[in-house]
Image (tube, rainbow, N blue to C red):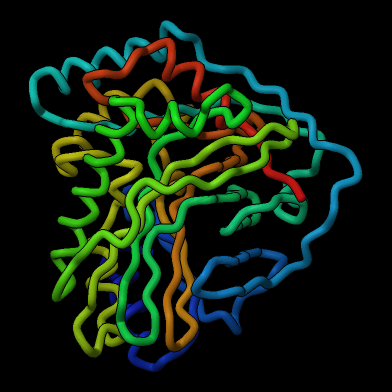
Length: 333
């Protein structure tokens, strides 16, 4: 579905108070909008479990044994070539923060179509023969009074490292990167809201990896007030926020140009496709959505795990490369 048709369909269903699911690709050219009562779990499985809503159209299952994942990281040389291009543009002042992502081939001992049943995450989505996503990152949520909340997530660290929480909260690079994204989200929300404010700044969540280890994730909460009648033009205002700031960078438009060139050799098809897009649900009264990270894509060669991180002028190529491997995991019950 084209961007124009997606906007029109979201507007129409919002005006009818008709519950629907939407899936929007990173470059907004691959999109799906479908009323909830037309969804078959044989084609699409979804789960939303956050402070705004609980919706799910399939059953979770406990996994008896921990999943085994083997990955084949892209070469450091290939990654560093892209990293250096990004760093060059940062030094020129073309960007303050750029999210650089890669595709790594993986093998996992769980059938692709069943991975979603065993994963533990706030947001889960499976699209038949395409991808499975188990994301911890909220995008925006809107309550029945039109209060919109965004939860940019920037900063990941192994929770088992000594003083991990103190280290990540006081790391200058991490703080700069996170503050830059919070400012970007504030600017994005100001395009569609009557007023905007920061509710929480740099709070920590813990996420359990399939290995049993825990990761720290740093997030903030940025809020705004939508005008009355926000349901009537959901597609219009929602698309003004895309792509998500946390997986693009700042300033957004110039950074997107840098991303397209830098990532040309980092993804098997040279594109992110649905990865780092967003998916969400409108139930007739409230809306909730997530950024599509923690993402396994199926293609003709097998499975690839897509992951990435924010690059700033203070970033180190080797450290960023190693962090990519940390993010290759399946969170299980």
